[in-house]
Image (cartoon, rainbow, N blue to C red; front, side, top):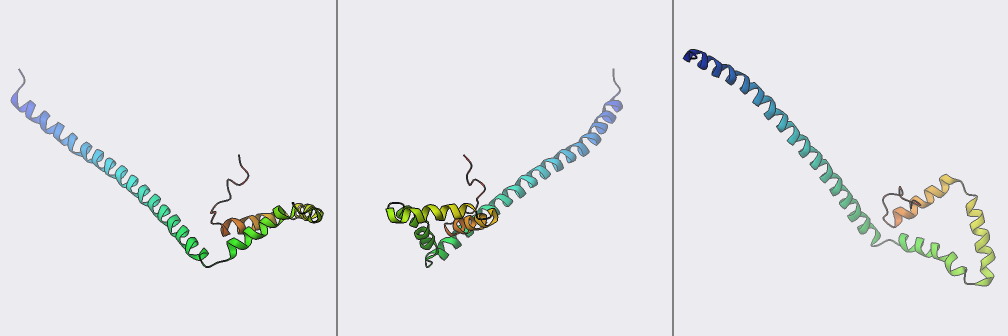
Length: 127
């Protein structure tokens, strides 16, 4: 038979161990929840920033001819390709454009993309 005092002391010992362990587990779980909340808030800020950017772009383009200007300029070679007397000029123009430095082509592509509201050129040309 076990003495009653032994059971009492064993019970106190377990309580003394369980308290700090449960505090550690509680703190760990709270930190994990805080981390997930911070990540969620960060994603929401990014989403809101994107929405704000798109709203600003839409507002700015309502009174701008920039988009239409690029559309007209980009359509000229297409239209000219059906006019036989313009075909040599269009062909020569594209040959000259091929000799342009890559950085210039990149700046031009970025300007056109920004005009049409495309935020990223990272997928440009990828299939």
